[in-house]
Image (cartoon, rainbow, N blue to C red; front, side, top):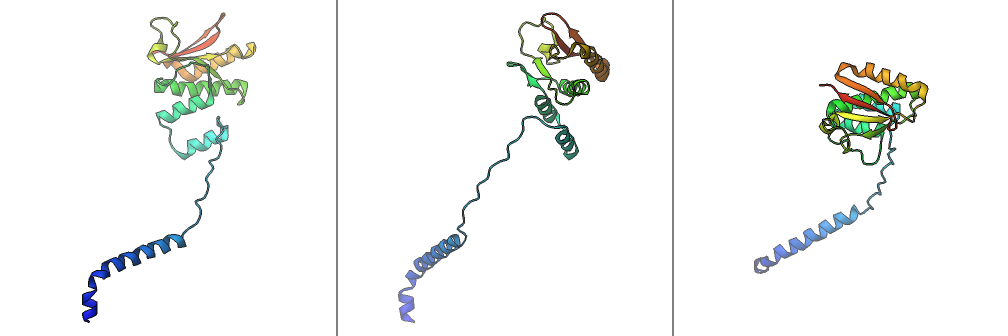
Length: 177
């Protein structure tokens, strides 16, 4: 008994060493390689089925509607759309739908201006993030009027749709309120 009391101070270091050995053995028993994760490549555009599936999964918020507009259109280099009013994002989705009805789902509309072009009229709705321009000169001539009329019908009185013809032909859509 006297031997144990005399060497009692060694008990703490022996227990610490035993605990370290136990932890080491536990780690070695669970020693397996970390699995390699490769994310699936995400296609840059959504198909109609993916779009409907996404609609059924969760409600859209403002950011998701804006993201969908960017995914369903192409933008001319330099186009700034980040500060668009939420109603313009929604109108943009409706415009894309009208293009698809007339030209088919494979057609990708091009937004040529948001709040980015310094040569709009001084009081232009573009500077208030309440207007967008869409390319229309690549649409067959016999379908342009159909698109313009369908968009105006779809958007209603809250929006003005102008088919600006001439050298820089495009479709101008702005909020009236």
